[in-house]
Length: 568
Image (cartoon, rainbow, N blue to C red; front, side, top):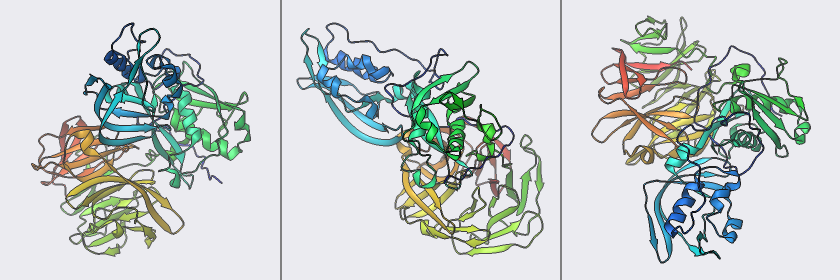
């Protein structure tokens, strides 16, 4: 059974996040707007059919361009193929994303493309980073009219990185976690076009990725089809499901309505969703048929209902920022923890966790009066972290097997065996509590990776480890030293270059996109304080906390700071 929480709360800010989709070749959609919701607004050049008398190289160039722009059944792209090749070609099977700077070379064998595959998108829209040198030879033959046509197209689509960035839409699908008390995002990529909204709905019905599946619920929607999706002029997405939806229980309909409310509003033109089947609209427990994230804000993966207050340690004193708009408005906070070094504050602002005594003790204490508790004694204890559900997480530098998780001061059973062996440098839970980012040093290499967090009554298990290739996206071999979540599916990574310079990059959890955001000259940064919906900070070795005001714009906001964190 899917336990579903139906609570209302104030309107929540929904961040635009990295997400994803399928590579559809057809699908029902009604055309009520000049441009489909979520379509990339970059330069869009419709593909042209092959020109009469085109050379082998021009035919291949035309085919490569035609594969990068969505068309129903990729009809224009198929014109570059022989009839037999067209019949056996399946563009819906996936996408190979390659560097766009490579040259085509014509030879007796055909036309060769030497390239670097930077990533791939499978049939369900999941992006996987790659960094593989490849060479593909397009073989051609002349048809009865004497025109060159391709004999051996790739199994799916080949799309240059530029065309992928321009012509694909990133959307987060959303699935309720196993407890039913928070949504977890699942990034996908979809070819941009009028078919995108319907493709997003179909992907939602198909369910979560295999990576996320252990920690989320799955509505039994395998037999539910999509009759159509209309994006109305007021931004409401009218989702019409096929008759199979009638077999869903009331609880399953509620769960799917919640998930679609968050998923569909990830498309740029969609402000709300209404879902129905057989001509009858589905309604929330509040009697509304038009829903959005604000209808279910307590389930937000970025925990928008939490205050997310900035706390610092300055001169061994705990302080908090009283007004987020006034960086000089720090007030001292009472705590019985003496000389806190690295800190975390529970999302309800009721408890402080701190590493003390030169990284050898983990203590907790109520915010305000109350005696501290020593939960852990050891060496190399790292910055603690509170999960959304109140769990306290504590790593030590010795390795993943050092992880301890406490629920109401009681240690849970922990299984982190799926993580590689190495030294833990930093770690940060996502706001939904279902994923964790870890900076792991393995020999001479330091990497950032993700795992999902599976829970039972008394056990926490990390599984599904995969590393994010930062070098491929940034061209830098810098060493990561800290990490945090800036959106539901994007990370901020603090890294040190070989020359000792530090900088911050923002990278999507699937590695599909990364951006260097500086700073360029703020000294030696050591720690991040980032959380969705709040201004990012970076702390340097001299106690200066720099505020991120825009790309490569970091402003000194606080001084004499020894540690900094956001609550929750």
